[in-house]
Length: 506
Image (cartoon, rainbow, N blue to C red; front, side):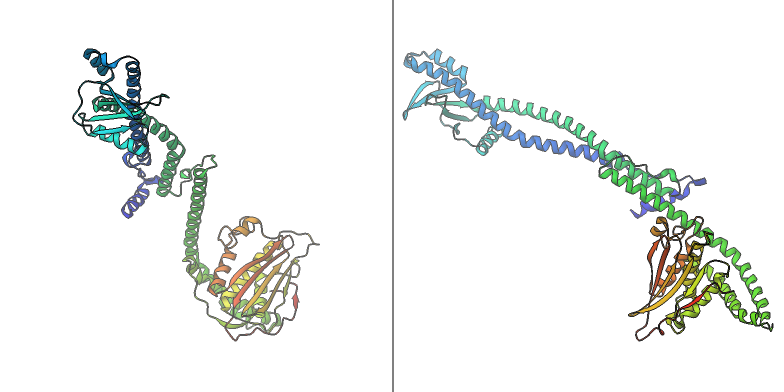
């Protein structure tokens, strides 16, 4: 199986200009249709054999019963006349006509021999037609068929309503010949019925099941050879049975796999593009750092208050630039947990959002100044920055001056965990974004977005051993919750003191 898979893999890659190699197919002699045809014939023949055996036995019983009734008719004529005056020639003609060697009748306990040609030395089998059962009849039929034709049978039984029991002594030669002819006819008829039934069953099952299964198999082989070709996705039939369900599920799986492969290719292309610009971007940020260092020599109070934030922002930008390639390899550095004042991180996030006083968005930091968490400072800054940036972008789409646009960050201790809530008054997440909440390139809430913000935040929080939850979303309110575990014995700071800022200047 592994060799076949490798061979198919190489064939799929060997086609030039996007053309895949010829997909392997199942030989006709090993296909399901051939197996089905032979199994159908076999099973029908077995069923015919089960019918054939009792039918041959029944034929033998009917043959002897018919012969006994014929003899009984001659016997009644003889009994009404004088059988003692019957000539030898007449007796022989009667016996030859009936195939019997002797004819007798039993009445009121008395047995009377009517006609006899030559009494055989022994009788090999006694057959009571009134008492023989199905199993015994089958045994007698097999003995007659396979034990030659030189045996003598004594057949007796009641005939009609006369109350008389008639007996005949016959050879099994004619019985065996008749049974062989009957068996031959039944066997030929059974074979014809088996072939005809097998062809009908084969045609029905092949059309209903085998052909669709063969089509699904071929579709899987073709899709495996070139999964980026949309034309190789199976087109399901309009069926309500299990085959239709399997075809629809296969089509959905192929479409999902094709989208996943396309997204991985986009990610690979993105990583390549980012790696090309990463070097130049890092140089430009380093130059900006050198320029910003000179701002510390200016005595202006406003410059002195803003310079530290600018330097921290540039330091983070350089760190992000250096970590881009690591993220392109789907690897993040393990978090370095430290005790942090959450309120300061939220303030830094607000500063990077660059919400001006005329922006119309109110940013509320409800985290107490002494509230502490255990986290990696840089990574958790990125988590809050991505969540808050998404909220600001969601609320920036409408310029109605009467619209309330508020972003609130709050935190509380909840047992052994810390819960940080990010709440905005935006329009809420569309269903598609909710369905693919933390999936890159699919979880974006706006047209043209990449959805990387939530994907990055989810990855970083998971690395901390925590989780992100969409608590609520709808018109006018969306709440994300970030839950982080805290080491045993850690306690959060004092209860939050509400601090409201409406767009601090950056």
